[in-house]
Figure (cartoon, rainbow, N blue to C red):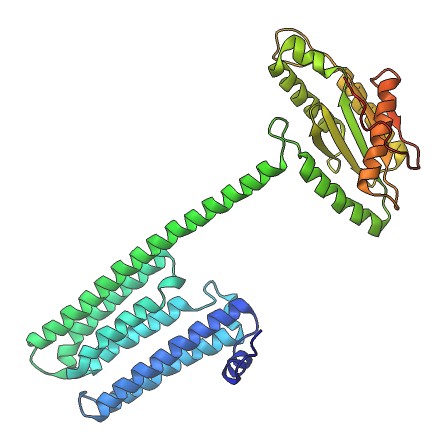
Length: 385
């Protein structure tokens, strides 16, 4: 990592510490420096006798620079943060456009330098304005310089000739071209913003699809594992109980064989809706694979978790799958285990799996609770129907 130079340290100590305020402040400072440079050019022309009124140019320079110094101080002090436009971009552009129009009148025969300054002013605020603000500031600039062109001939008390017409046309061309280009830039910015939003939405949808089971809309196995590991760490810190339950639909294979896979899909969706309606909002249900599901009960005592699973079992037993040719009923078996502080999530799931095997062996359509100690995964390879 490179150490900051003396210049960067000096600038860093001068600019605000807040990143957004720092950006706004640096832009305000740049606008002030540009105005100081433009005023220096006008003063040089006045000192060379190329303007009609040297004293008026001096007053113009003082007022123009002084106005932007006040706005810059407002930005740096944070006072402008309470305003709708905290960067004072519109105010600075209106001030510099008005200053440029006055300079056009005062510059006399040297007013050919004004269009370049005007273009710089209009481009300066392009990226900080909305489309409506670009149109508004462009209309204000056109109106202001129409007045300035009309006033220039009277103020300089000269004959309005071809050169004056050329200057006026050049100002109008610069204004028109700058406004058109600014509108084009705004259109590109809007399109890029829409593309970024569409990309962000697509990425969010892809992340959601990667975490969800397509059929049931539940978290998939991978996402559920991540969530269980996160909840495990929280429980270790807080000491809250954590329960894991494995739920398996009884005799699910005959449903697919007798009624078809579309009916089996509807059965899984109906089961999902029934379980979610029977548990709390804080409980998390995930599809573990096939007709097997995992339910995570956070901050729940073992007795309360067992009671909740009994409600789930009863609700599923009374469920009827709709939109199928003939009535389909099924039951669910569940194995419940409390996560122990000295074990992994995998071990807790193994104990819940053994409890589920017990519920199946006892006749299905029941809830079994794993003992509060570890067992070997003796049933890891058993088959379920």
